[in-house]
Amino acid sequence: MGIFGRRNDETATVTTGSTVNPDLTGLTGEYTIDPAHSTFGFVARHAMVTNVKGSFQDFTGTLHLDGADPSRSTATIDVVMDSIETGNADRDGHLRSADFFRTDEFPTMTFRTTTAEALGGDDYRITGDLTVLGTTKQLSIDLEFNGAAKDPFGNERVGFEGKAEILRSEWGLTWNAALETGGVLVSDKIRLNFDISAIRNA
View 1: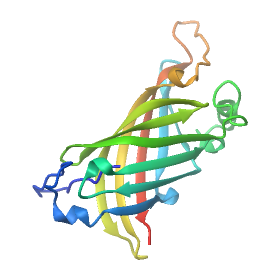
View 2 (view 1 turned 135 degrees about the horizontal axis):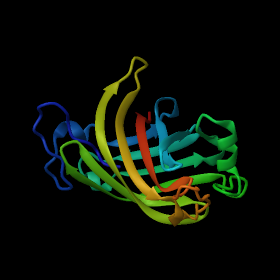
View 3 (view 1 turned 90 degrees about the horizontal axis):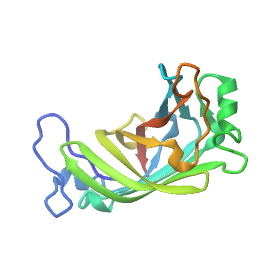
C-alpha cells in the first residue's frame, strides 16, 4: 500500500524513484490495521430507489509501507463474512445464507495487493486479488492520505480512506428478484468504502 503525500501547502512529490520527501521515508515499516478505528463498508442499491449501507465488523490486516519506493508497499486484509451488518437482522441472515455469501462454506474474504502506484498529490491506487466465494479477481482501490500522527498512547498511526466499485456477479453473487415495475431488487454494482487507521508495529 502506497506511502502518501503531505496535505496543506507542502510541495513535495512522491514517486516510485529516488526523489522522495525525506519525511516520508520515516513512515517506512510494518503496520497493523486497528479494527476499532477502521471501517470496511459497502453500499448497494435496493429496489432501484434507495441505498442500503453495511459493513463488516470483524477483520484483520497488515500494511508494509515503503517511503522510498511507494510501489513496493503492500497490504493484506482478511474479513470474517459472518460479521456482516446492515442494521437489519433478517437481511443480515439472508446475506450470510446460500443466496449470497454462503458463510458456512466460505467464512473469509481476502485481499492481497499486487501493485501500488502514486497518482499525484495525496492520491494513490492499489490493485490486488480479491477472493470471495472461492473466486479471485482483480480489484483496484483509489486511496487518499488522511495523515500520520502519534496518538496519546504512543502509537504511531497512519490513516487513509479508499473507494472502489465492483460488479458482485463477477464473484458469483448473482441472487436477485424481479420487480413488478421493472428492474431488480438488488443492484449488481456495489460501492466499497474504506476508512483505515493502522498502527506501526513495535
